[in-house]
Length: 260
Image (tube, rainbow, N blue to C red; front, side, top):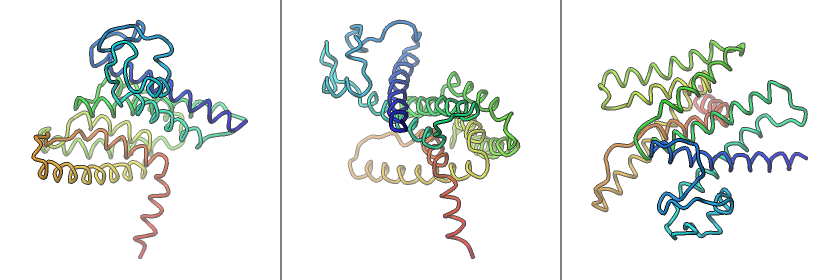
């Protein structure tokens, strides 16, 4: 029975990931979510056989069935990432006898995970964090936290994270940090609270530094004219997921390692 639950959750995540891909494309093109899915290149309406998450990409060998245009790897990767995120969230709260609180908790986190994955991809591609996705996630998370006995902890987490980024944004006049990152930090704080949000920020800066050094080294050695700037939102979201699932372990390891 437990195995069946995990399979169903993973399949749900794949389907939500497929929807996220559709929503990302339609936001990019400023199109409505209404209407059937179609190939971006030849505009042919896709059948159910073309829309099976991950499996259609594999069976079609990464090409459109109708015009043979290559399908972006974004599609299966987003679907797999969403499926794995849903699995991880479900694993944290799995119980055969669900309580109402657990049920709400799981689906809230499913929603937040989907919003974060959407923002990750969109910011990576367009250097922009869409308010249409971020603000509802902030408001829904805040509404949920209002009923938590630790609401002050989450509020302080949001203020600490967003205040830190606001200071960077203000001092640099937006040159070092975009204001979208300030708003994203509010969601991080409400989701993680203290001290997990601090762990998420540390992880984000650590990952950003590593990737930045690698990109600069590659740019120098290849002579390729790459952009020097990088969107920071994806690193913040990666740090959020890592801190969400492993934050307590990382904090305990850090405190133990530096214990005097």
